[in-house]
Amino acid sequence: MSNSEINEMNLQSCLNDLMDPVFEKSLSSSGFLKETTVGDSGQVHVQIELPVPSYPLESELSELIQNTIQEQFPECQDVNVEYTTDIKGKQSGGRLGLNVKNIIAVGAGKGGVGKSTVAASLAYSLKQFGARVGLVDADVYGPSIPHLVGTSEKPMAQEFQGKDGQTMTRIVPVEANGLKVMSMAFFVEPDQAVIWRGPMLHKAITQFLQDTEWGELDYLIIDMPPGTGDVSLTLSQLLELAGAVIVCSPQQVALLDAVKAVQMFRQVKIPVLGIIENMSGEVFGQGGAQAKGEELEIPFLGEIPMNAEIRIKSDSGNISQLVEDDSEAQAHLLKVAENVAIEIARNLITNPTRPPLEIL
Ligand code: ADP
Image (cartoon, rainbow, N blue to C red; front, side):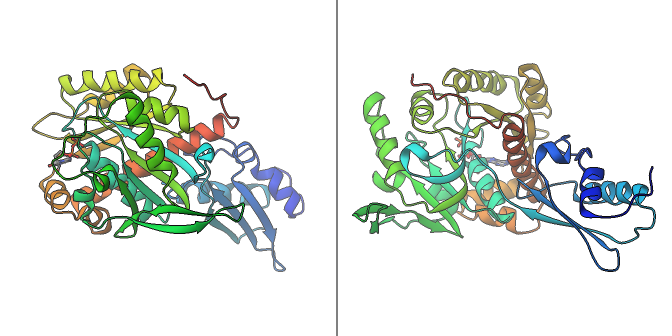
């Protein structure tokens, strides 16, 4: 290695080809290398800007950067790596006037696998990482999110000034432990079976998303109804989603339903970000979703154990505590959320251009 002078240009070119250990992209092609500066006494400062709110291998990347610089510039003993975050997204709510970077659908092939529990804990985990997050309960046939997040509040209507100066009435989401939440349950009586189909359902979902004042969000999580393609079709026509995550339990029967869910999302052109195994452990087994994911060539986003605390906290409306407090479930839930954000960013880095929007 040459003993060239340390300056910003030389530092940049020395780091450009370095691969980050999570995305396995060079720092120049991923755009992570934001700034390098050299101080008066030769100390080097490197700023890495990450597109995700949580990056699992910061210390590895720092070490890699420090070693690379010190190899090229042996006299340089002081390298400081700083991490900043700029969450990237497709800005997918454009057609509905939403200012949301990433919209994530949470689906399952059938009910009872913990889809709503995972959707709510995913939202709280991303918020825990510092992201701005909203949660939509679009499970029209069994909306359970208000119960899980422990709110009985109703959303309020408020006047807002539009871009053209006109005032319009919009719905303000309910806040539950700092999370913005909207649910179909706010608009129907409890126990009233909602059997919307086709055009009515399409209209209800559209209005529901369009008329809500979400503000600026990094992630909007949508808890989808299990199985059916109706709501997915509507969403794919209205929005360019970051993708869908599929929740399944480890046993074979549930996995077959998960395969159907994957096919359904693929059919309506919503990219599948990956599969999450919930309720893994002694009762239902473990590892089934990972194997199925490999078979379907979709990423495995992690497993959440069958755990009494998850059931107790979610059934008593305290799901936020699962990710805020130290618990057995906490590390699993945060890991899943970290992986979801990484998969979204990976897709953006690999395919920076928008695919054409297809009207089905
Ligand atoms: P779905 O939305 O798929 O119908 P829910 O999220 O409503 O499922 O979960 C169904 C039941 O399973 C709830 O009582 C919930 O508390 C419980 N549950 C979900 N995930 C877990 C888990 N990992 N461990 C224990 N209980 C769970």
